[in-house]
Structure formats: structure tokens, C-alpha cells
Length: 502
Image (cartoon, rainbow, N blue to C red):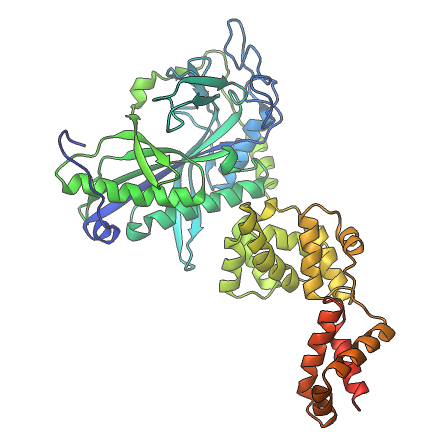
């Protein structure tokens, strides 16, 4: 922003009336390989700091890198799934810059010769409309280490008392997927950004190349955004909000930057080309460093690595291994399960499709599985503050609960108690049912005794039933259910009430 010009956020509706946003997204994905990009160190997440390092990933003198073949294959798989061209020749380069968490003082990456170029990904929005996002490139590189800044109010280096460095992540294989500019999004730019990252995450998960855990940093998004006067066709100066780590935050970062940049421009200032950091608590961004150009990084070909030349045969063998793409799978599942478009969107938005499919594969019906995952278990995930697939119940365990309901051994209330027990770590569904004594009381002698006791306690209701008012039996059913703590078979109880009153 120009010196002396203050920034006030502009109302979002005014922003989209006066400006056109130009959106670009860079997504970094850690590959799920056993070893790092250029050495044999393991890539296990959460290991003790600085225990998964060697001379190569620490950049010590005399060490030499070797390309991880599995990472190259994963890069090709991603490129093909994104409808990219896999180039016959690519090579690595050194990207030179200093930062304490990068032990070599350069990053081994790909610059002007990436492995995959010119692709696209179709993205479905919440209302069912689609946007095609064009992919400029997908290239291979290595991750940096991790800095922990101790002290201070922001968790960043400014104001910290000291910093700790963990180099376990340094050298982990990364794929960076860069979109071309996405024009014409206007007021839907935040939604498009979120939907693109969500669609990409689903695709990468289907490929099996990454766990795409945004909360653990294995998938991170840089949001590039600029504004230009409405319908001018001009290109504005962009900001780059770095390392946004959730779908919601991607959407919020785009929206905030639109309102912030509009405030700068309407106040007569100029947007600064810079990196910015997203504040999760406030949903705002703040300035980082002035954005470098490619010349600042002094790229040059990596002298210690030979070029990568994927043969046509190798490319085709990788193409043949592509799994069913998520969009195709959704269409197939929607038809097989006879779901409406709205039901399919609810299932997808809840992140429940894979879980429901696995529950169906374990023997449950699609309707029962969908009902459990989208309603009760989604509520439990919200209460616990975890993702749906992080709940402590497997699809097979849920299928067993559903089976017990179908066999008449549990009713819906008891089934929820069984699920609660599994979620609490009390064991398998059968173990929980046994330990909690949840099975339905199906012994007629016990049920008759409970029915007779309830009829004796409510003689006026009993008289109504004997007089032909069968609907009054509901009060007796309720009393029996209460007496048996919900363990009676309500249908059988009703039958016995009618029999005892005729």
C-alpha cells in the first residue's frame, strides 16, 4: 500500500460490484513415500525431532542426492489424473534462498522444465454448476524443515524469544500443483477456491499418493489474488497468502483479501506484491515479505542430478494404473444407490462417501449406512471436533451394529448406545452390547409381566383399549419401554397389549 494511506475493509457486495478478482492457487502436496526425495531417510510423521536426517538431506559436504523413483511415479500419476501432458524430458534446478529451516540454503525443485504441464480439473460448486480450472504445471521438489518460534504473541519469528528447528521434514517429496489464472469467478471466487482445493484433495486421496492431511501440513495451499476494475480486462497486483491449511481457511483468505485490496485501491493506494500470512483466529491476513521474482532465486540446473526422461511405455503403464476418478465414482454410486443430486451433495460435503461405501461393502444397506454417517456420526464428529473419518469406529463395526438392529437384537435407541460405547473405546459392538446389557428383551414371559404391570397402573387407559381405542396403547408401550430401560421390542409389546386387552 502507498505510504500514508490507511486501509479499511470494503463491504463484500461492493467489492464484487466494482472489481473483478483474478484467482490463482498453488497447492503443495507431500507424497506418501517411505523415504525422502533424494535420500533414504524415512518420512514418518511425528517422529522425535531431528531423528530422520542424514548428510544428504542436511546438505553436508560430500553428500550426493539420488532421485526417488516412487516419487517420480506419483508425480506422473498426479499429472495424468489432472489431464496434463507428461513431458519426455525434465530436470531439477536449485532454487537459492536462505531460511534456517532449509539446511542446504537452496531447495531442489523444478523450474522451467517441470514433469507435467497444461492440464485441467473440473470443479463442481455447491449448486451443482461446474468450473474448469486450468493447470499450468505440476512439478517435483523437496520440502523444507520446520521452525518452532517460542515466545511472542503470534507464533512467528518476529517477537519470539528463540526458535527451534526440526529437519525431519527437510527433503520429504513434494508435488506443487499450480493453476493458471482463474478468470470470471467474481462473487464466487472464495467458493471456487475452496471447491478446487476440496476436489483436488479428493483426487489425490483416490490416487493413494498422499494422506492430504491439511491439519498436519501434508497438503498446503498458497492463495494468489488480485483485483482489477470491473470489466476492465486489466491485471492487478497480486498478493500471495502462504500455507493456508484448511478448506474453510482457503475460502476465508480469498474473501478477506478481496475486501482488503479493495480498501487499498479505493483509498488511492497501490497493492503491494508480497506474501501474506493467514490468521486462523481472526480470518485475516497480514504482511510477510515482499514477493521475490524468479530472478531473485538464481535458478540454475542441479549439477548433481541427471535429467528425468519418462519413457512412453512407462507413462502408459502409469496411465493404465489410474483408479476410478472421484467424479466418475460419484456418478456411479449415485445411480447405484438411487440418490438425488441434493442427497449426493450432502453425502459428499459431509466427507462420508468413502465411509458409507465401506460400510455397504461390509454388509449394510446404503440407506442405513448413509443415515448413520451423515446424521448421528456427523453430530458426534462435530461434538468431538474431529473429521468424520477420525471417529473411533470403523465401517465394519457400524455394519455390525446395523446387522444387530436388522436381527431384532437392538432397536435404534440401543444401537446408538452401542455406537457410543465403541466411540468411547469400550470394544467391538458385540463387546459393548454384552458389557452394557443392551440386547432387546424378547422373552414373552418378561414382556407380559411388564405389560400387565403397566396396564394395572393405568386402568383408565386399559379400559379405552378394551373399548376399541387401540391408539391409546401407545401410553402403555411407553410405560413398558421405560420399565425395561428401552430394551423391549416395541412392536412385540404393542401386540401383547392388544392381546391382553381382548
